[in-house]
Amino acid sequence: MGDSANGLINRPILASIHTAAFQHNLNRVRELAPESKIWSVIKARAYGHCFDAALKGLASTDGFALLDIQDAAWLRQHGWKGRILLLEGFFHENELSLAQELACDLVVHCEAQVEWLERFKAKNHKPFNVFLKMNTGMNRLGFKPDNYRTAFHRLHAAGYHMHHMTHFANADQIDQSPTVGAQQELFNQTIEGLEGSTSLANSAAILWHRNALGDWVRPGIMLYGASPTGLHADIKHANLQAVMQLHSEIIDIQDLQKGDRIGYGGRYEATAAMRVGIVACGYADGYPRHAKDGTPVWVAQGNEGVVCPLVGRVSMDMLAIDLRKAPNARIGTAVQLWGDKVPVDDVAQMSDTIGYELLCAVAPRVPVAIK
Ligand SMILES: *Cc1c(COP(=O)(O)O)cnc(C)c1O
Image (tube, helix red, strand yellow):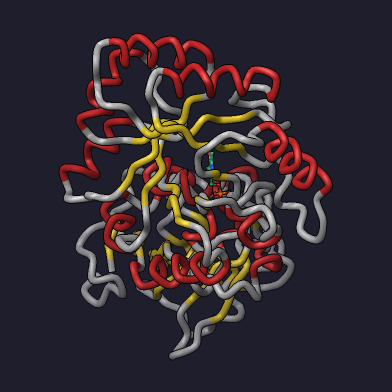
């Protein structure tokens, strides 16, 4: 396709990552949490956006929070000198030397980690910054309040620099979340009288529970321009920008008669004569196979573009769209699967999931362009 909209020479699919949108969203976090420092959460390859793009777009963050120490090593190799928080700490004792070399801060959430750190300190290493994780009701990671103070005092006695952390289970309840209040209260009671900074808020709390921020906020999904609830309507007025745009092109056009069926299983039956565009994007690219008929797909038309409905089951490498609203569409016409024209959450909603899952699931075979 010589006149490829993407300028590609291969299969016409591309995830473009817009670093200006990253910066914009990070600035929004600063506006919403002006008193807090920011751990930009970039687990899962920066929610599928790739670390290179995150490092470029989020360079003015106070720190990056992630899971895998190899990714921390990558950040250091690529010049990141700021703070790095390992969100689940370390999985095995033998990671501690590397974590120290890389100057990572550690989340500590269980007794075994406390023991490993006591042994590590006993060998006269430099102390880590430790964010001790309290389980205030999420019941995933962390110390119950009863054991929290004991763990705190043990690590404090071993010479570590101690901080406090918890994670909300229901901060995506927008207007009011009794559990956020209850978790926060338990957290505050438990750390009473203990030194150290605090970290509580994920994106949902930053957007909707600003009395629960703490010294360090931990935004993830809002940095990528998607909604903590999975519903785009909930962030429509939050002034966030989609960072990823998933682009492809129409690679074939079929003229259907009333009654013709499309794709595997013939799920969609044409109710009238229609042109159908075949788009080079399927579930092997990370597009959800469960997307229902009517899932929005943006198609270029002049300078504007229109949203056309998906029709029929998504297959491995392709999907089909009803082109009745896009009479000028032809082979090579640009399509956006999600991004600034179609919120990823709108696509997710049509396949009973949330934008988080779609962003993280963009497949390695999709080329990435950092803009
Ligand atoms: C993933 C994660 C976050 C970010 O959550 P978002 O909902 O994406 O803002 C914050 N804190 C912890 C501990 C996490 O695991």
